[in-house]
Image 1 (tube, rainbow over the protein chains, first blue to last red):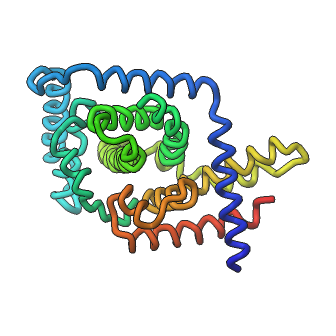
Image 2 (cartoon, rainbow over the protein chains, first blue to last red):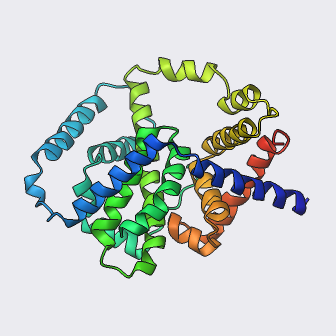
Image 3 (cartoon, each protein chain N blue to C red):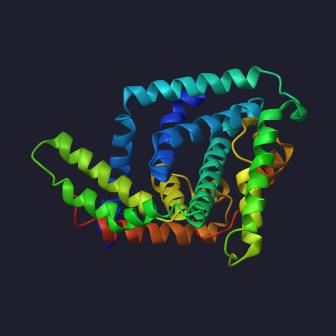
Length: 118
Length: 177
């Protein structure tokens, strides 16, 4: 039983290694570009948050649309979940956001992210 | 830092791809994780970069997963659920993958079949199981290191990993050469 499982696990590792080797040239080119961009961005001085009008407006628009929608869709099972959704969608993907000190504090402290739902 | 990123980017991409099944999303995740590492930790000792990068990649994947869940929920509420319903009717993608890639005499084809089947089986796992399995089995991290990378307890890592192994064996063991 254990030997069979060990064989299976060795095979999965070998398969994952093989898949890594087979990453195609186009994807590797994109990875190279992503790396260069990340390294270049690390050398640029950070913009103050108040100089991010586009991301600020987008976040505000998302909050506005979703907040209005809350009154127009059927009641949710959990109204707190809806508020969490708004918060989650409104902080969409601006790299500057990740410079937030709160994130670094969280990651440095090893804050728990317990959940079994995925 | 450039040399470090060259050494880890391909695995990070593969992990992100398994989680998302989408090339663009996976590339975004990798770039986002690189940005976070460079901006936040370039000045840290090089020995710390590996664990930090793992932690960041897993948290970015987790954030992507949560956002995706929320987006799908809102799309359904707003009346765009037809596509999702059609997808459900299309059947289990893993079964399709296994059924449509019978191993042949060509070693290359058999190997690609194994990759496709494993990718599909991993993608079908709950995210936490998927992450625990990849970090423990592929990256070779200890339980404690995996727990740190995922931001959960060691006990949870053991549970997620155990469940992942059982599910993967059930789905794949009899199909692999």
